[in-house]
Each structure stands twice: as structure tokens, then as C-alpha cells.
Image (cartoon, rainbow, N blue to C red; front, side, top):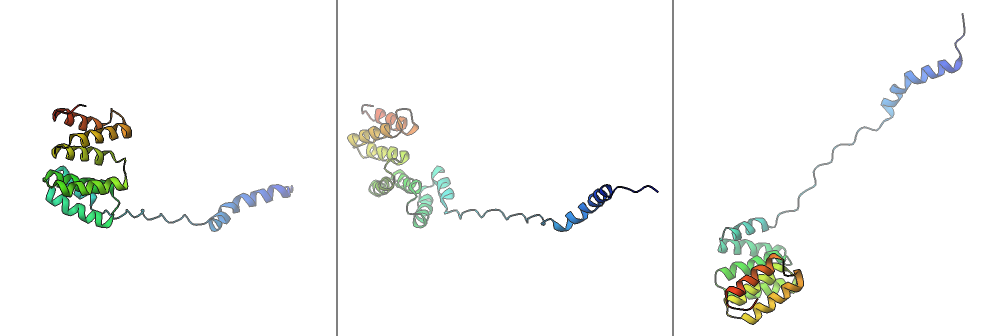
Length: 159
């Protein structure tokens, strides 16, 4: 009987036992992580829908709740001002625009809408100043600049 070299036997034994040893030595697969919790919606999305649907009284109620939770939410402050403006509450509207712009002086929407408010209240020079500010913020091609420029032109002001 020929002897099988020791090395061959050792290699064969190692090959046969590797899967068995491997089964017990591997860590189990990590459990899947639960999905990250979404931040609680402050109600802004619902308020924005109300604004876009021209349901301004409803939008104001919702936006006031958003601002209570997020007092520095400039988009909510801007829409709050816009909704009051659309309802003819110009003094209230002005206060909300000022608050929004105190937080972010370069907010394009608040600057445009403040210019629109100035037009509605016969303050052409102030509207033109908002237009100049928008030009510095975003240039002549941005939507907010063009919208206010067009409104000023229709109102008889230079643009």
C-alpha cells in the first residue's frame, strides 16, 4: 500500500472542514435597519396647497401654526404675508414681509411680493427699489425680477 503524502491529507481535511468551521465562525447578517424617521411635517405643505388654491383664510390659519412651530421659516412667513396681501390686508402683509426679510434679506419671493405690495399701495419708488434689490440678488433673468418688472411696467413705472 502506498502512503499518501501527509501534506495531501492535511489539505483534503482542511478543504472538507472549512465550510463547517466557516458556518459557525461567521457573524450573522446584520438585521436590516428600520427606515429613518421622517421629520414631522410642520403643516407647511398643506398650507402651501391652500395658498395655491387661493384659499387664503385657510392658508393663514395653517401658516400661523407653521410659524408657531418654525418661527424662522421664511417661506411660511412670505406666504403668510402674501395671503394677507391677497385679502387686502396690506398693513398686516407688510409686517410679515418685513419679518421674513429680517431673517433672510435676500429671499427672492419676499422681495418680489413686497414690491407687488408697494405697487398695490401706490408706492412706485419703493417697488422700484425692490426691483433693484432683486437685480442685485438674482439678476435680470430670474423669475421674481421679471415678474416684478412686468408689474411695474403695467402700473406705468419705468422698468
